Image (cartoon, rainbow, N blue to C red; front, side, top):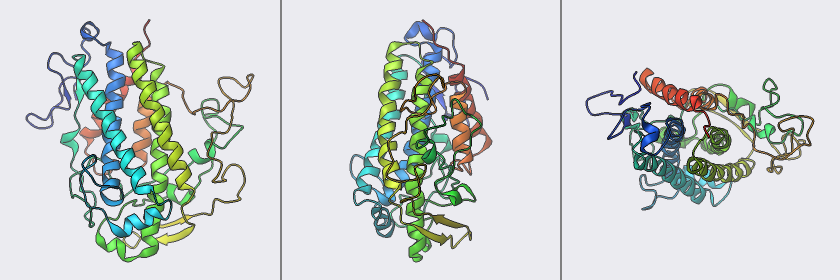
Length: 354
């Protein structure tokens, strides 16, 4: 797969630019350095993917309106979501809207500088949910076969360890069974709605998927910002990044409200258990949602409350690996992964120039 306008079918360009191909050494002469453009392109791709699955959640359990159109809502699923917080549909709607604006802005900014933009539409081939409320549109992401790493829960509660300083330390999972097997976070069909406990398990899974995703963006933007050369590109990254932190803070709080239960997937037979996270010690206590101060930069310095990790080396490729292992892209063809890896390599190759 080349670095120019990559086509899967006639007219289906994944990188588009009216004036040049991606990686052109002249890019910095038309308004943006190649490295900065690569950072923003990867961010745009990540936001397109994020918007895709948030739209799926909004169609079934959010608020469908002119701002975030599509779908008609699913009463049983929405009621299960609201068990965690009655305002969950509004939060889902607003998070969805945020991600849509992020990728639209990033692509528009790239275009304004004469740089290549990102288009993932050729990969909208996954079926998604056919349950009542879904628009039935083809998707980029798969929410029905998730394997979730919820170790961020204990990472942000640990006062002794920071993954940037302790890359081999294993943080405990908040919901160990979500890290094993494949779990659906949305009803696949209306048949899934015939099992009330399983409906709540799907809502609980979604509730932990939300912060699992947002903590990734929480780290991605400050990590990439360290590679930006342009002050304006730096401003973009450090302005979008904190909104991901706001999302993460909200969802990490709501996830703690997931009712304890054990449920069996009626289709796959996979079991999931959501533990009671009340009165279980500092590293699991659900009310401790503020980032615990931890070692930062050096253990010779005082502990500090920070976003972690923020190490910049290989961050883009790490994000692709994280999302792939989550199962978010199950069903996508090899060309999809090749394209994401291409974007990640280019972003990771960016170097700060002064």
